[in-house]
Length: 235
Image (cartoon, rainbow, N blue to C red; front, top):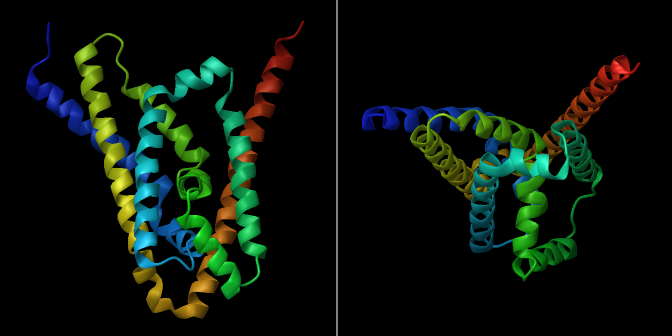
């Protein structure tokens, strides 16, 4: 028996809130905004706005595609979520370490970075590392895969479609929030001053390093637990 429209609309709204509230604290664009400012240093306002728009679009596409097909892709390649956490943790930690130990950029370095980000490679660099893993990292992917699996209802196709529509709408809203936050990140941080921005960015780089280590350790711990379980099953 088909579900009433009101029930489908309710499922859509619940799935939208469920996905949006579940993923937004992990993406946390306010915490990533200083890293965006650091990576886009030297760009004009129009170039920075374009870069923020691309990152927001990439986040929406990545979250939506992961929500729909993430679990199937990992299953096809035989990759487990702990392995994704280990690889992603290594990437996040290495980027954070480079940012933490980097010297103050000179005017020549700033000009070279601005030129690199405004040429044809801008789309690639907007995805890596600014979208993945700095904004939408392995933790976000793991949660999004779990959310996507929970939105599937094998016994009711209309309900599944309503749930997935809510999840996809949440993906668009997440990308919009990221784009707006990054677009005005310089304004948000301007009151800190140059010294305050440097201190805040180094602090966020250290926190990002801790997050990367935590993601790496959680993946290693899960892999070790899997090995332990397999070992006990051996005759």
